[in-house]
Structure formats: structure tokens, C-alpha cells
Image (cartoon, rainbow, N blue to C red; front, side, top):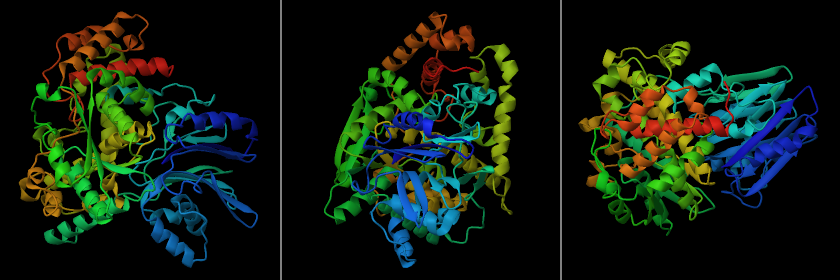
Length: 612
């Protein structure tokens, strides 16, 4: 797990740009605090910041392999979970290895199979390989987009990096929003359309895509997409295969030469990961470390809602005891949570999920003191269909993204002349229909089944990236690698074609998952209703947010004052909706969070010197 950056041109000498590339790479030090590496020739510079997980001594990057007079050079951010199988196969083909790290296995896989190596990889990755034989740079990103990769093509030079902040250090990439970028931030945010870099010159390599840059130009192609096929298995077989795939994913992702843990919320998803991990480590005579997060005095102010039916606090110690883990509970104060809104934005480079981001940023800071690698239960709801919008009539019938049903309410907060110019309804509909048009068709579905398949696809490809971005940026801000077993592509591919009535077996959300782990998980967790990532319910946090936003409105120079309808924002401040009102975004983001989003938006415009 690392940070990568680079630039390549076939028309000019890039040697003078080495100090700039080093500066760009250094901006990613949080992702890789353990080492810096720079490699360059006349036309290419590659930079790497390393977080050491496997083979500390010999796994340094950029890594070079030489065959005759030809060099192959890689910078890589990620983790392969089938390293041993690939190494064994490559050794039978005559290759020799000098390290035990997956970086070398990935590089040799490319040397042996070229772009076809991508179909063989089980892991999370974003990497670039300079191929002297073909005179090209080859870039690729993992199938689900767990690891990030952004790029810009300016003045015949391809520039890439793990995070937007590194690209913005280049003088030819200004902090200017495209018109669509402004629409994304105001009307879709904190969601982001896949491929959109928001800034005018920046794009994102899509999950499941690879790119080749050579003297003829930049060529981008997909190597993986979801495919629709009739599900071949009966229900008992489906339960068995789901269990096998999930357990195998967890065990593979426990590979590490540094301390490892799980993030335990006391819900079904994280308990399943913890149970598999604890059992596997116990078999080796080891004890699993687990961590949970909560907020000071949160139990005093919790309000039950359809989106958050109960608190986690009572379940976490029971699970830790059940699986004999060494558990630590991190308690955050409201002041910490508010203050962290600003570094959390810097970690993401964009306004985000506000306190849902800042709490993970703080949580990761504490975990990193004792562990370098963690496993998380994120993305189970996407693949098993656990979110409320899979079951709520208004979401199923909506002709838009089901987690963003409040566009009309959001529009009232911005100047009406701006709304008339940007046409948010048209933009959101455009992006919504683009997503629907991507869905791989399958015949024989009822209208209800077809709609649930649409919601599943939207959730996998438009919602899940928000959470994966959050996980990557907030955890890597502290050099903490958090893996997501539910994103194992084999599990995702299999469950995509599983019928909905299998997924809701027993009449409960994620019924298939519950049956697959029924012998592993205690009943008090197995029967627990879905509860999302914990958020604060303390009125002090709301007070801090309201005061900060009021102060922003009082300053004439505040950037958002040129975007918002001040009267409407003041109404929001003085008369917010009750805590159990329908969220304005997702499951957790109510009026307090939209106020915090405006605070982040204002800070972002100032810190990043945004123009549009």
C-alpha cells in the first residue's frame, strides 16, 4: 500500500522535471511513510512512497527487472492476494525471484503475459509499468476501484498520481473546475461520477480499465466488467459457494508481515470478517486485534430511525468476547470530530461525507498506533443488497439515484440564477441514465426483478466508489492499509447473478449472507437488523457546525457566499429537520451533515484556490 506518481513524454526531455516529480511524490508521504523512491530516464520519471507490508528489505520501488538490454520498471500501490499461485506458475515458466513481495510477482506477470496478466490478478491495485521493449507506459486499476489512480494529459505529457493533490502541484494543471465538475460537487457530491476528476484537466482511470501511453497517444480499454448470466446453482449450493468464497477472501487478505487487525462495529458484516479472521489466527496460536469507534455521550442522544435502528455499543464487547479478540474502543469527542472536517477534506481532495469521513480519519489515526493493516466489513451491503433503498417503495420507484432523493431540497440552498444556468435536474438525469445504459442485460426478468437489478448495479458502480474513496483516503492519510474482503471480485461476480429471492432468504436483508455464516455467528448478531457506520447524535456537534457556518456567512469574502442563497441557508441553520428525518444523502447525512458539507465546500475553495 503506497502512493505513486509519474510523468512521461515522447516529445521532450523530462530530466528538468525530476525535482517537481519528487515534490509530487512527497505530497503522498502519508500513503507511504516508510521510503521514497525516484527513477528516471530522459523521457520518463516514476515516483513511489512506500508503506512496508511485505518483505521490508527487498521490496523497494520503483522496482526494475532487466532482460538483456531492456528494462521494465514498476511503481505499484496495492496488494495481490494470489501471489503464491502466480509465483509458482511463473517459476514453472523459467522465471526467478529475488524478493518475497508481490511487486516483483506483478512485474514479472506483466513481462510474461503483457496486458493478459490482469485477468490473473486477485487483489487491489493501481500500477504503472514502463516497458522499454514496447516503448510504452502501461497503467491499470483493480476491478472494483479499491485503489485510486488519476491522470492528466497536457502538452504531450501524461502525468499520473494516486491522489489529485499530487497532480495539482504540476504548473500545467490549474485548480480550475470544469463546468461538469462544479455540477458534480454541488448536486451529486459527495458522490462522484466514475472517471470524473472534477478539476478541468484531471481524469480518473476507471475501475477495471487499463491504459497504454506510447508515441501514438493514450489508449484506454476495459479488461473487466460485470457480466450477466443465468445463475446455475440451487439455493443450498449458492449458500455453500458464498461461504467458501467469502472465507477464502478473508484468509487471503490476512497475509502480512506487519501487525493486522479488523474494524469491528458489532454489526453482521464486520462480525463475519472478525469471526473468520479470529478463527484463522487462533489456529496459528495468535490473537486477533479488533478496534471499534464511538462518540462521547452518544448513548444519551441516540434517536432510533429506519436507517439506524439501534446502537452498536452494546454488541461490540459481546462479539469481542465471543471470538476472544484483543479489543480497543476508540471514543471521539465532538470537538475532535468537527476539527477533523478540514484534514479529512484534504485527505480526499474534495468535499466528502463530512463527519462520516472525519470520524474514520480520527479512528485510523488511533488504529495506526498499534496496527498497519486492517480488514473492514465495507461493501457487504452493496453485493448482498442490504441498504434500505432496496426495500423502500419511494426509492425503488424513483427515477434517480436512490440515495439522493432530495435534489429539490438541495437546489434551494444555491442561488437560483446559478440553478438556472447549471440545470442540475438535467445533469443528474444524464448521469443516472448513463449508468442504467451500462447494465449488462439478461432476459426473463420480471419488472420487479429488473428494477432490483438496476438498483444493485447503481449501488455497485455509483455508490460503492464513494465508500471506497472514503476508506482509501481516510485510512491512507495515516499510512493504514485497510482491506475489503467483500470486494473480492470472485464474490462480486458470483453474487451479481444470484437471484434476489436468494439474497433475501428468510425474509430479511442479506438473508443469503446470514445463512452462509449461521454456524459461525451468534444469534444476537445473526438476527440483528442492518445498522450503518456509527455517527454522532450529540447536539454539541450540531452546535459547532451551526456556529461555524454562521461565521462563514458573516464574512463577505467567504467563497460559498457567491454560490448559496443566504436566506435559505440561514433557515437551515436556525430550523433544521429533526434527527430522524429522511437523510439528504445516503443513510446518515441529515441537515447537520449538509451544513458541514457547506463548511467543507467553503474550506475547499479557499485551500485549493478553486476557480471555475
